[in-house]
Image 1 (cartoon, rainbow, N blue to C red):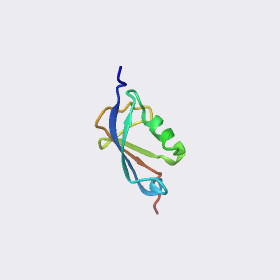
Image 2 (image 1 turned 90 degrees about the horizontal axis):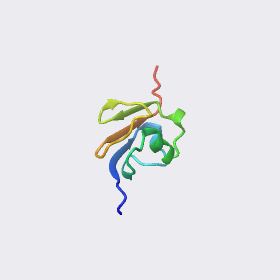
Image 3 (image 1 turned 60 degrees about the vertical axis):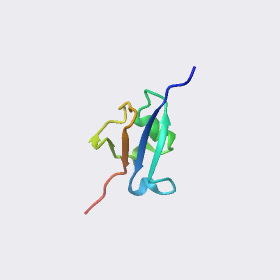
Image 4 (image 1 turned 120 degrees about the horizontal axis):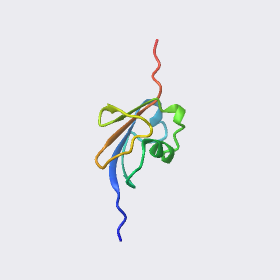
Length: 79
């Protein structure tokens, strides 16, 4: 029996890109959450401040669906 998977696009921004990637397609098990992706990429959760799925704000607990575009941002500084 073939294992079911979903394909998403992950985009990292600003300091999260350092020594990683800008955009990557990933094949995942159904029921994968944003938090699962953050762990898989070995990103400390405290370094991820904003999460968007398909351009809309989402929580770390959000389950991803096939075709989703996940964007992860670090805390935004300014002055």
